[in-house]
Length: 175
Ligand SMILES: [Zn+2]
Image (cartoon, rainbow, N blue to C red):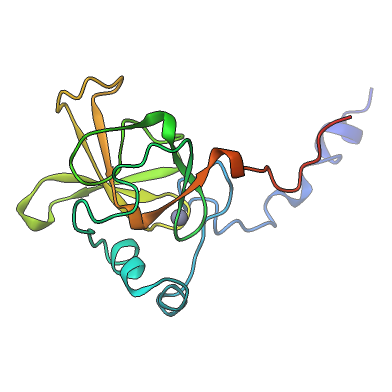
């Protein structure tokens, strides 16, 4: 029986050598990597209104957005980075003037920040992948949804991919 052969010398070598500076950062979105772009890049890629809401935590005016009254089946992606954030299954009519969901597509796709600006005590919702502002989440309003939460999301922060258009890109059906 060789102790040296396996346990001690066999493996374990490179463990200390590999630096992992990123290891502690980011709330690990299931999709994978975080999206990091400079402010100048965001300004270039987004329209001024998208930039104002997504990157400066602005809010679109109620009843003006694209999706507040939308019932189309599909998935809502982050307008800035494409991460899938919400689906039509959790969308409900709150009549507040913004698209409302009672849950995100998956916890981990969004992150939460305590927001005490504007004299209010709210919870801001951001895209976990690119840290763009999406809206706020409210709780206990009595909407009768499974969670009694209302993710009040700016239309301009998301993009609907209707169900019939959804193709899982790059994957061929198994034979
Ligand atoms: Zn994003």
